[in-house]
Length: 256
Image (tube, rainbow, N blue to C red):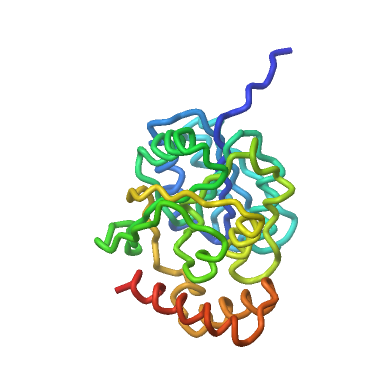
């Protein structure tokens, strides 16, 4: 029996009603200049044709590096990502939402950056894109590093840009909580212990804004960030308000 060789990178993609975009997302992964990866598509109780689309794609391309994992029922993005993390076999763990796109050099550049900086946690710059995946020219620049205190005022870490080194951060520390903005809550928890997140200030991801109701609904965004301060971090009203003001200013700047 031949020994299974683990890939260098595991890509976690929660999938829910993504039939319109999932093929382009898979294409962007297969187009990576760095090819030693696995992609875990965690299907979260889709009600559209996402699963037939994925199965047809995998049959057509004969792509063995992409695995479809099906949840028994809809459990939400946090639980779907957590299932993907449990199944991941790579040293490096990344996330890619089902409608976002990576530029071909994304993995290669970020892996080199991780090795150069010895980072356990890194993230990159990104560009807002329209429904067709075309860049809108609004590129989000990122700082060299972000500490816990800085991250509380600046939610510039975007999920589809994140990479973790599992030799430095165990899977047990990467479980996302079942709350809205679960990704930001995880970043804060990882950083709370004194780690830094290292920013690669290069535009390597296209963030497709169309259909992202949480991000496009400003009132909902305000509520979920406020709840993170109050519930996830246990901050007082005064401290929450202080940090929220910084968050609001920087959030607006990223979008104009």
